[in-house]
Length: 85
Image (cartoon, rainbow, N blue to C red):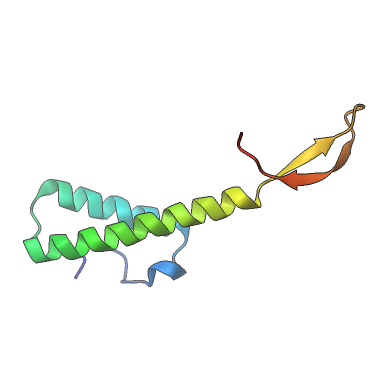
């Protein structure tokens, strides 16, 4: 169904890296324009799902990052949640 793709693994079971590889393959195949319309639509839909999965994995990783807080002497005093701002 998806030429040149890995097996049709359930997206929620994929690692970030595997999902990115498959997503890049989908984009390359769609850019060539050599895929049948129905296959292109299916590939596009899977690509959207892969993109959402990758975004979720990145967001989950970002939320796990903790900032080490230091006292005036530079000694660690604890951890606080990641705040990008």
